[in-house]
Image (cartoon, rainbow, N blue to C red; front, side):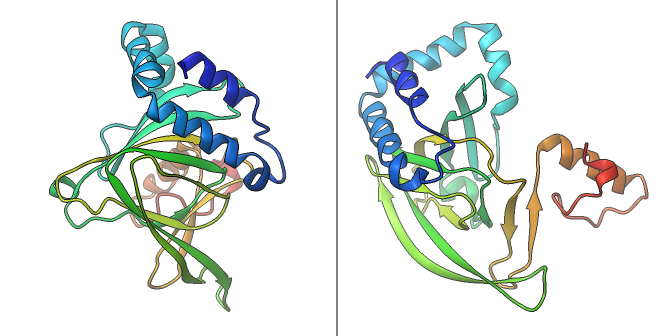
Length: 231
């Protein structure tokens, strides 16, 4: 599969489908597995294109997050209508990440991924409401170790946590996310059930500056945002 064929097939996916997980995600996973197995003919040419095209590099740079503490995000493609984004994720091994593990979190879009190299452990959770509106009850519903060639999909809003168990081997995945379908993602404290919502970087930055101008540094990076600072 070539890069052009991969993008063409992903353009045929109904990213807004109400039954996305059942009707669309299996096809997305199959495409990712094909692209991963043919990395030299599908992904490598795209990376070379990004490296040789200054304008393309500049267009994708705002959607790339590197370096990061636990997982780097390298965006290879962003659909013009932002219906989907295709990325490479690199999960750091323990020799670099130490004992740090990402927070339990959910996303505001459906996603599918395939492991290109290495392995990771993914935990998924169910959420039950409690008496406190800012706390929930989290319960682990599954724990799976995936290795190179294996794929999976995660529905919108389902909390999960991914961890690279290796001390010295990074984990590389090919990942695609759909459009944002709900206002915010969410970060959870697994022990207490406390959570806070996450928003776009600009929206978060506006709120942070609004709080910092008071001299108060005690705020979550993504709390509920006052309408005056959310534009």
